[in-house]
Length: 74
Image (cartoon, rainbow, N blue to C red; front, side):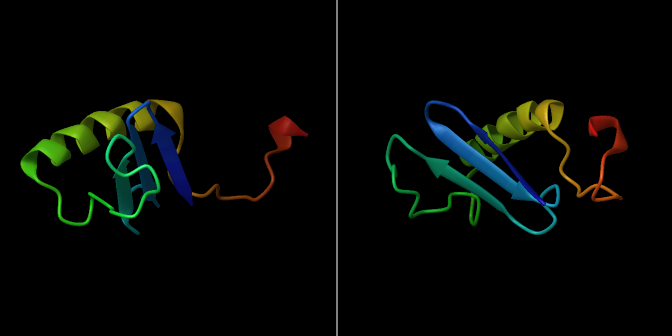
């Protein structure tokens, strides 16, 4: 399961809480998302990733649910 967070400048995505990969795109310099900065991040990019990851963790769970049905939502 993937989850993303988008700011005016960045889009950060992680798959299975980052275990299956992660993506970071800088929309100021790469609006079409051709260069994934999370593949070989610099120290500055790691700081950005960590900040976005903290915000993402408060907004959405990163693992698939144990059951495909959520009875509380029915």
